[in-house]
Image (cartoon, rainbow, N blue to C red; front, side, top):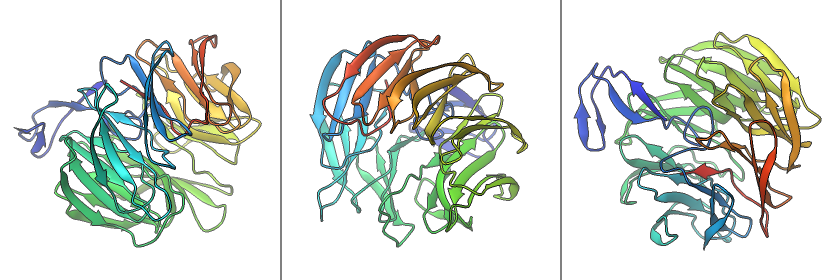
Length: 379
């Protein structure tokens, strides 16, 4: 799960300075759920599955769906956890009315190592920067940066609007620069010191972004003031390369395959869209209801995604259906894929987690007592 990145200027990784043009090994931590394929696999030994339950607890299972432990969090917690290379878990909590949300570091044995207050009552999923930083953005418009011990490095307010719901994620390019969109149609680029390098008006309320480091292209999907939506690509100078406009609400997740193919969850179009790096639509696959969350790309090039029609779909890269199974309920999160190729499907409203093989056979089901409030992290 590592990627070889060629630098054009120095960068500090885990305390060591690397010169320009010298290759170095860094986390392939480009976007939400760790990789652009959105497998959810984050760190070795990859023998545990984490998620946040509806009773506001972080739950740890084995990959055979055996229960290990749960750790109570604050109310309204919906953050997908992330895991560092030493197995420590970082998760944002929600709050009761009038309090601050928090960022927690939790040990592999479930003990809380440290808790830090944030400004806001909701926060995005934490993001682990290759330089050993933890980034998190709140619905009060604040971007926070901590080290791995949760010592605060800096904080900056990028928006002055309260967001009741928001889904923006953070990405980092191969130079370590941080890209953070805001609900006021802005995209900010910052360095690791918290300095704003560039501010761009992108003209939409961004839902999700993804960065293809092999091609140096940033992808953004979002909506305007009506149901009009736009998906577009920017080069490293933030010039628009191409765009696709939809007359419907399209604010789903964006995943990128190793060959550069983009998979877009089409929300109200009820479709999964396959788009090539030049902006041409390869194909779309229609379901019976909204397509939500991030598609997950299997190592054998299958793409897996969930629909509000209650099915988990598996397509090949040509858009042909391999199988579908009733596994997700009508409010699904993104599936996850472990290093052995097994698939994990979650249902928000049916309270279960299912382990599935690549042929669509259900191996095991774990029944929760409450709704499931996040996607998976494997580590």
